[in-house]
Length: 153
Image (cartoon, rainbow, N blue to C red):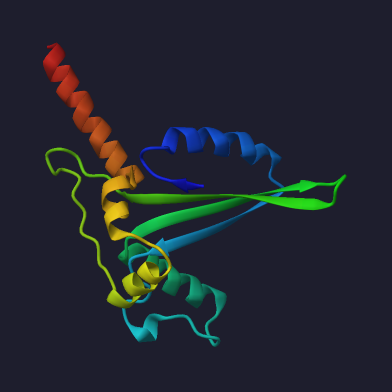
């Protein structure tokens, strides 16, 4: 199921219903880039710690465009496995006054790859489900509480 702003509530309800029945899940993320410099890309000689650090560096540098989760339900009687994929088109939240305004680095080769596999930059910008980091959410809640308290005074 492709998940956008328009069907987020419906998809979330479906996801919550399917999750307890899942035998396992698979996760996939798409970013606006892969590696900041070629030497930072993982290779077969890396330890697990080195590979983790390299992937973490890239994930924190580039923007997340899609978050995919496939829930797999096993039917023991029929011996079948059913996949329920959810492909969340997501983008950083922006508020009306620009207080949440993030810069995103993009790597053209990654965007070419995404576009060649059906990714739409227009859909991402206009229909993507907005998200915030925990730090952004905390700051936003603090700001709104202060505003509400000032209004109530």
